[in-house]
Amino acid sequence: MSKNFKFLLISIGIYFLILADSFAPTYPAWWDSKEILSDATPNNYGIANQGQAKWFAQQGIEYLDEKLAAVGGAGFTLDDLLIPDTPTAHYSALNIGQLKNIASKFYDRLHEVGYPLPATSHPNG
Image 1 (cartoon, rainbow, N blue to C red):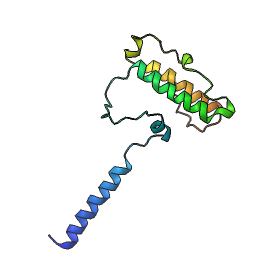
Image 2 (cartoon, rainbow, N blue to C red; image 1 turned 90 degrees about the vertical axis):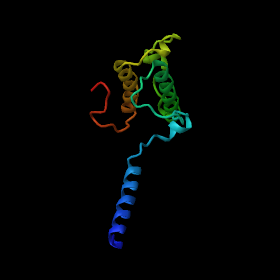
Image 3 (spheres, rainbow, N blue to C red; image 1 turned 60 degrees about the vertical axis):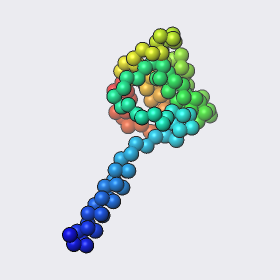
Image 4 (cartoon, rainbow, N blue to C red; image 1 turned 135 degrees about the horizontal axis):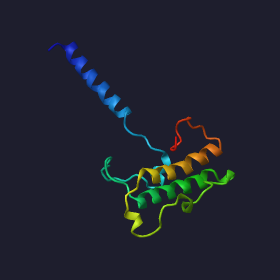
C-alpha cells in the first residue's frame, strides 16, 4: 500500500468521523438545566406515557414563564392541556392526539409572541 493511499484512507476515516458527529442530535440548553435529558439509554421506539408528557410540558411551561415574563409567560397552565390527573392515567400510553394537543399550546403561544415558525410547523397542520 502506498503512502498516498494510506493518507487517503485516513483522511476519509477522519472525514466520516467529523461528519457523523455533525449528525449528533442537538437539544435546547434548557433541556439540560431542567434535567430533561438523562444518562439512560434512549429508546426511540418506546411508548411515552401521559405522566412523562405532563412532566415535560410542565418544564416547558416553566421555561416560557421565565423567558416570556414580559409578555405574560407561557399564557397557559398545565390544566389547559387536558391531561387526566389520576394516578393510573400517569402510566397510560400517550396517543398522537394528546401529543398534538400539548404541542399546539406551545406553538400557538410562540406564534402569538411573534416567534418565527415555519408555516407547516403547527401540529394540527
